[in-house]
View 1 (cartoon, rainbow, N blue to C red):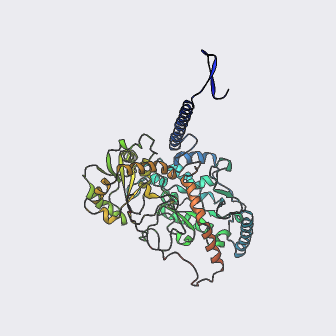
View 2 (cartoon, rainbow, N blue to C red):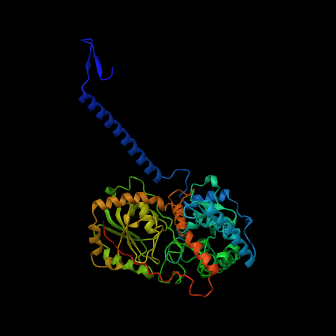
View 3 (cartoon, rainbow, N blue to C red):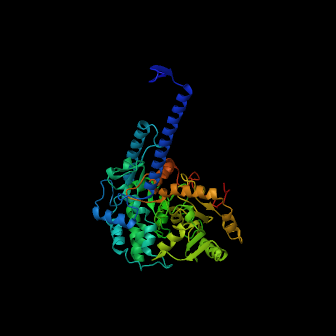
Length: 507
C-alpha cells in the first residue's frame, strides 16, 4: 500500500516518515544532476579537443591538400556552356540581364526571406587551365626549392601558402556537393541563377613563380578573358569576386577591375599598395592569412606553461608603417620577460616562432610593410594574446568577430612612450588573461583553412560576410544601369574617414 511498509517483527504495516521520504528524493535528484553535469562537461571537453585536433579526413595543409586535389582533378577543363571564349556584345549582356531579372523576380515571390536568408548562389568561371590548373601544377612541381627567396629573405613558396586563400575557396566551391559541408553557399551552373561570380585566377602564384614579363602578359590575358564575359559587362564587375590576397599580385592591371569585390589581406591606406578609391570595406572583403604555425593543443594553451611576458620574432627593418618595428625593438630589447628575435619564415623559422609563441602570454604584432601580417594569425592559433600596434589595420570578418575579446590594441604613439607598453601589459589582470586565452581557444577555428571547408571556418565566414553585402551589390549594379553616366548621382565610398586604432578600455 502507498505510504506504508511492512515490519516483519510485528507483522503489521507502519507509516513511513514524510521527512525521510523527502530527504531520499532530494539525494536521488542531486545524484542525477551530478551524473548529468559530469557527462555534459566530458562531452564539451571532448568536443573542444576534437575541434582543435584535425582528424584524418580533413586537410589543413596547403601542400597536402593540393597534392590530393591535383591527383583526382583534371589538368585542364572545358569551358562551361555559359562561358564565352570571345568578345561579347551589348546584346549578350542585355539578354543575360533579362534572364537574371526573371530568376530574381521568381525568388522574390517564392522565397519568403530572399535575399536575406537564402544560400548564396555562386557561378564559378571555368577559365582556361593556364589561369588555374597549370599554375597549381607550377607550384606543386617547384615548392621544394626552398632556396628561392624574395628580396627580403622570405621563402617564396611559404609566402604563396600564406596567401593561398584562392585555392581554399575554389577547391570548396568546385567540390562535389555530396562532399561539401557548407550550406550557406551553393555552386550554380547557369549564370542567370547566380548572385555572385567567382574568378578562379591564381594571381599570387603567377606573380612569384613566373618571369616578370610573362606574368604581366598572363595578367592581361586574364583581364581580357573576364571582361569579355556577358556577366562582367552587365554589372561592370560589381558582382564578381577577385582573389588578390597578396598586395603585389595583379598590380599592373587591377585598376581595370576596381569595381569588382576584391579579397584582400588588408587595406593599406598609404597608397603604397592600393590607389585611392580602389579598395574600401563597403565593397571588398578582408581575409585572414593562412597561419604558418600548427594549431596549439589543449595542453599548450595552459597559461601555467607561459613564462615569457611578451614575444616577437620577425624581420626588424621594414618599410612604410613597419618602421615602428625598429623603434619598438630599441625600447624593449633586453627587458626582463621580453623576447625579441630577428628571423624569417625560412628553415628553422617555424620551429623558433612556434616555440616562442607557445611559451608567451602576449605576442607583439606591429605593422610591417603593410598594416597586417600572418604573425597575428600565428599568435591566435598558438593561444598567445596579440598586442596589435598597427594604426591602419583592418581585420577579417569583423562584422562577425569581436577582436577586443582576444587581442589588445595599442596606438603607435602610446607604444613608443618609454616604459608605457610594459606597464600596460603588467596591468592586465590574471582574470582577463585567462578569459582572453579561453576566447582564443574558441576563435582559432575561424582562421583554419581546410578541405573540406568546415562550418565556422574562414571559408564559411567569407560567405556569411558576402551575404551581408549582397543587397548593396545589387543596388549599385542596378543604379549603374540606369543612372546617367557622369552625373552627380553616381555613388562612391571614397569620402569615408580613414581607419585609426583606439586601444579602448581593458574591461
